[in-house]
Length: 183
Image (cartoon, rainbow, N blue to C red):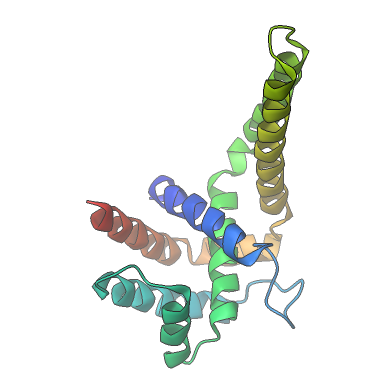
C-alpha cells in the first residue's frame, strides 16, 4: 500500500511546494510545529470528506473552492494543508527510510554526470548553461526532499506508524480517485 501512496505523495508535495513555497513550514503561529494525534485525527476525518467532495465536482477544484469547502468543515485551510504535507512527507520518509542512502548516492551521481557533461568539449556554451541550470534545479529539489525526510522527527514518525494503516488507506483512496479521474 505504501508504494501506491508514494506516487500520490510525490505529486502532492510537488504541487504543494509550488503553491505554498516551503512545504515543511507550518502556517503562521505554528512554526517548528510537529504533528499531533489531533492533527492525524483531523487529517483522517477531513481529507476523505474533501476527496469525496472534490471528486463529485464537474470541473477541477480551484484553490478558492477548496478553501471554502474546508472552511465550511470548520477547518483552517492553511493548517490542513500543513497537516497534509507533514503526513505525506512523514509517510514518504517512513516508506523510503531504507532508500535514503540510495537517493543520496543518486544525487551524487547526477552531480558527477553534470560535471562530466560540462567538461565535454563537444557541447557549446549555451548547451552547457542549460545543462548546468537544469541539473542544479533537479539536484537542489532532490537534496531538499532528502533533507526534509531526514529532518522528520522521531515523535512524528512514531505517531504516523501508530496510525499507518488508517493513513495508508486514506492515501490509497486518494490515489485510486486520482487514477479514476484520469481515465
